[in-house]
Length: 157
Image (cartoon, rainbow, N blue to C red):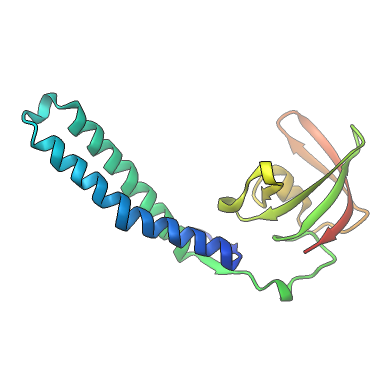
């Protein structure tokens, strides 16, 4: 089983909807594609059949992964979180000290991360480096390009 991951109600709902779609819509479509390709004759030279079987294999792997994720998911009770420290679901306003630029990120579970909308995973290098810090703290975070220094300006939920 996977390690525990914490989700909002909405985030867990999205995971369950994706799992439901894959199991009840996509799986039958792939099975039908295999059956259609099988009806076309010699399977040893049937590219459609082999492509459909490969798609089925990848689909089943993704379904297993999602089932494991959903099974190990826990709903996060935000009312119980310490609002003075950076934790999952924190909205963190910070300043990159090397370029004097401010950014705001929301720390989320892996599957909810979306850099374009300012959501970073708590498992990313920046996310891990921010966890537990308070306003005024300086985070020195090792990233592939070196060490980044960030000052925590504000923490909210």
